[in-house]
Length: 276
Image 1 (cartoon, rainbow, N blue to C red):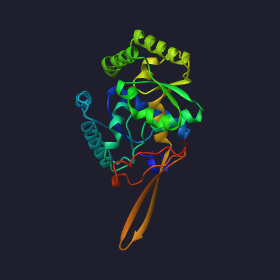
Image 2: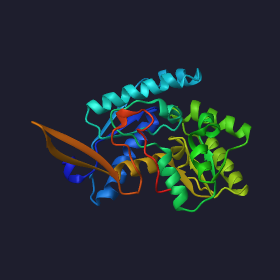
Image 3: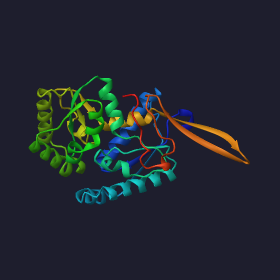
Image 4: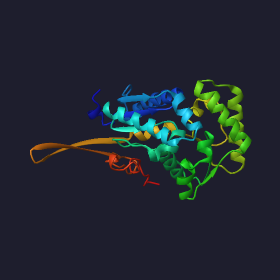
């Protein structure tokens, strides 16, 4: 399949956990069929990962500079492999996002999630993920800027969810006991006014598959995959002096803005959700 003809960018995946990265790859392939309207119309995808142990050690030390350094190295390798745009399905790693350096643009995982919340006109949503995500600013800051309330679980429930993610889900262990607990937390959030719950952990949708939820669940990985597939790469050529210059622009069908020259500033490489 000619990727240029199909107008789907070469997507690079910065992997965190094996389960999350594998799910992201599967979703990219499945969702691409809907985008292209043709079976097996899969995108060109390159994935790079470091040992998860290195990420977890840095996170446990609260060393987000090291986390960003690993992500930046992955970005460089993916760029060398030809990636037009980069995504990372791991929500926790986005705490280091503003420190990441990349030769090509990224889609921040929060952007499509916030866009969906706004599109549904929700004003109060819950969030489930690691404690770094639930208690940090990755989601709370952009949502609060839009006057959207973010609800987190009670401390004891949050601690247990952290344990489930860290010691079960990223190891591929899915138990009915944990799924029922998460289902209960979601139901409690609904009773307290949450209109939806963000599954801000890549593996949570795997755990909750087949379980009914009291309110809609926003799968951050699926939304990220759809956003990546909806970006278009356009190649323009023009002469400058005696050399041919190739300029690449990536534009969105969803109304977002992306920085085309991310290498100019590590703070400018992410997509800013103007649609919201």
